[in-house]
Amino acid sequence: MRITLSVIKADIGGYVGHSSTHPKVVERVREVVEEAKGKTIIDCDILTCGDDIAIVMTHTKGVDSEEIHGLAWKAFEEGTKVAKELKLYGAGQDLLSDSFSGNVKGLGPGVAEMEFEERPSEPVVVFFADKTSPSAWNLPLYEMFADPMNTAGLVIDPKMHEGFSFEVLDVYSGKAVKVRTPEELYDLLALIGSVSKYVIKNVYRNYDGEIAATASTQRLSLIAGKYVGKDDPVMIVRAQSGFPAVGEILEPFARPWIVEGWMRGSHNGPLMPTSFKDARPSRFDGPPRVIAAGYQVCQGKLIGPNDLFDDPAFDYAREEANKVANILRRQGIFEPHRLPSEEMEYTSLPKVLKKLENRFYDPEEVKGQIKGEVEKGDMD
Image (tube, rainbow, N blue to C red; front, side):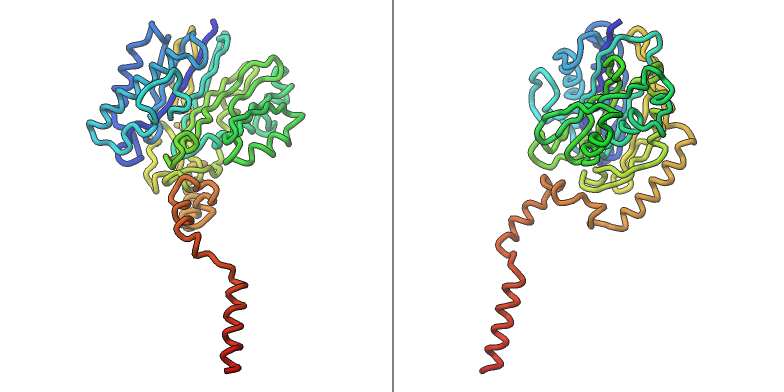
């Protein structure tokens, strides 16, 4: 059976501030989507992380389906109505248009979709992060699909031994390049280490070209042309039987790393893996959180979710994330806690520079003028 798995997310109102979602908003989104079960879609589920809501759907309409995207848009619009009634903060902030135009890409919501032939057993993991950007997935995707020290299957599974190819997107130009590993591993790292510019969009198995993972790559600031916060990405990863085992997929998150986002989308911070119930960032609106929802796809039905980070084995990662958060918070508004100036393009920084542009001067010229004035005074 050929199935499409779509995950579409949006921030349509925070409760309170940017920390969480309101149950009434989530319920309204769920009601709209569930009305389409057995008609437009086969099955659905709703996930939340921080102030974001993700709609998980299975169907047979392929990626970029106008019907599926239209359903998600309608659900978010209905949820926004409730958010506005409750006067929630940032109600509808990820809906950057007053009308749907056939596809939610470019309109604000984040999208990760893949189409595949359902295997005899089809386990998938949906990752959902808050207070960070799509480049947060670069490091774990590299480790899952290209690092044999993380993924033993790259060495011992015949279907994985030929490696995986990564489709890497330049978020500024909109162009993508496919890089094959292990042959072009260093080329891959040269790109994806530049997290503000390059993000991994898809991963394919070299053995047969089968899709292995897909991630949302939308950057709201580039869509809106102004500061609108970070992008809170989603990602789908297929597991087992020629793909990394579930444990190999989760392993990169056992040690926190630093990602863009956190407070006002303008700070670096550690990505903390949490259970569903703890995905409510509040300290300085963070630190950034990520959840992992495990599903078995069975004839298009979603069996789950299994809360995969609700495991004491990830307690050390959470403890380390808090330690890193303390160190970075000591920096206050100073880099490297605050993002570098090129990443502050859509905040107040350009206005500050504009205000001060005529007051910049060459200190060497001024020093010469002062020296000349002093010498003239001595002569007088």
